[in-house]
Image 1 (cartoon, rainbow, N blue to C red):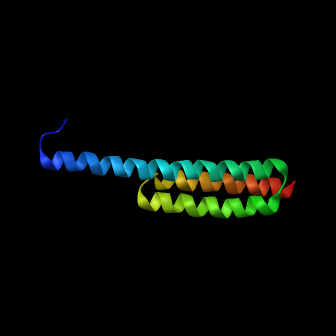
Image 2: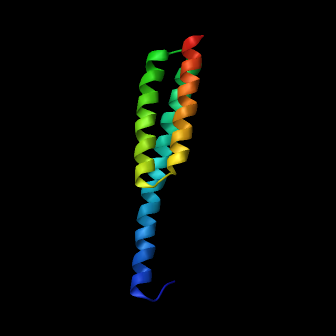
Image 3: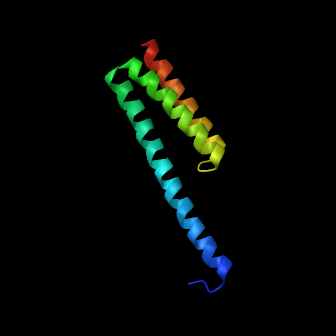
Length: 89
């Protein structure tokens, strides 16, 4: 355990940020999963809504530094490709 006051503070700050990041990542995974479920069932209206919601959450997480911006862009790109492919079929 840290003895220096600033080190103790950093530990508590890191714990708080870790909890926030965990919550954000969990919600990201859930929305992305819901998007792919909607695609599998063929519900294109719901898939479109979930795609927009997922894109918003991914960009927000990237802006806050929870995930890397390239990771967010890659996920959005792959989801958009999957949506367009399913829509074309």
